[in-house]
Length: 125
Image 1 (cartoon, helix red, strand yellow):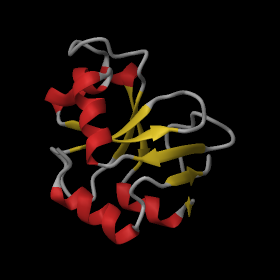
Image 2 (cartoon, rainbow, N blue to C red):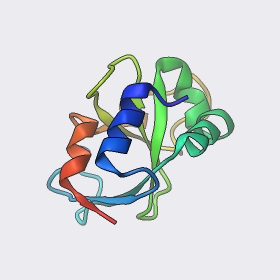
Image 3 (cartoon, rainbow, N blue to C red):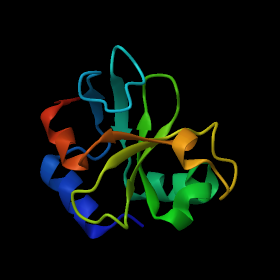
């Protein structure tokens, strides 16, 4: 399910199944003053989120692929969009805003990083 360029990225950055802290100063969505902690999914976790959970089910047809989950309390998953290709944007999609394929993009989806490759510069544990 995960595109090859994403797999190559997480392999080279050595972040699969790792936690990453995105500081508030870097998070374009400005959701939290403390920043957010995310957990990078492996292929099985991504597939489960996309096929068995919302918002994954609802946004999959628009090209969004779940690649991480929130460790800070919200439970919101994080996505890349395969329509953007290599180096694309890193998004948060709010689980309480997507119940089917008819969702309000402005309320449901926030840009977190201009490129998922920015994840390399944050604290990884």
